[in-house]
Image (cartoon, rainbow, N blue to C red; front, side):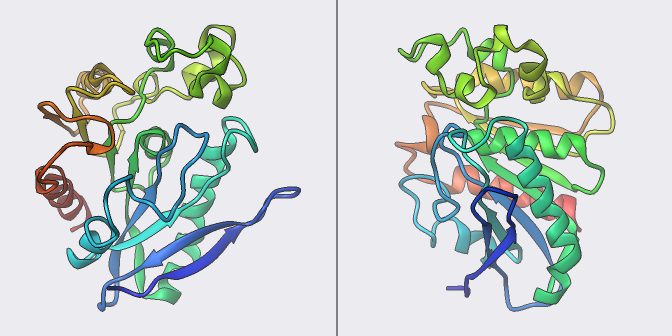
Length: 256
């Protein structure tokens, strides 16, 4: 099991310190996976890859494949609204660029890997920067206008997206567009590996299909893995090799 270094990477005025957990293989100059947790921007922890998966099945698996992992926390929507979370992610990337060498990792070969809400942040950060080698997007919301039409039993102003934006997407259209990766794609986008279960009840598979289609339209390098019967956070998936192996092959390809 790799050692875990807990590092404060920023403290915004009037906010708590934000930390990352850095795990690295026993080699110098390993590429870096920046991991962003899920939880609807409402909750979640950098300590948990996905509910139901142990460290050995997730973080340690990535390190064993030869990559460092920086699992980064960000402000939740009860603390700050969009785009604060994106600012946090970009600050973590910049911290790694400045200090990664001190910890024996090569942050010039950096991939963003997010799940659910974290995948939205990973996609947005990757689309907004030119120093990201690739993005692994696992079942992230990609079009917040379409998400507003996906009923989850909450009042429109109480959905996770509305709490993140400060109101339903239709009431804050500029923010909703800026927070929707599928509406921010461009020809210079980094390579994307997108994986999503076809039975996901929380974030419809159509979200990832729309992002992949938008990336394909502008000529970007994009892979879409449709996991038949897969649910959110891969619940009920007996063999996680099905999703981890393609993601790790992608990270290896884009960081060589």
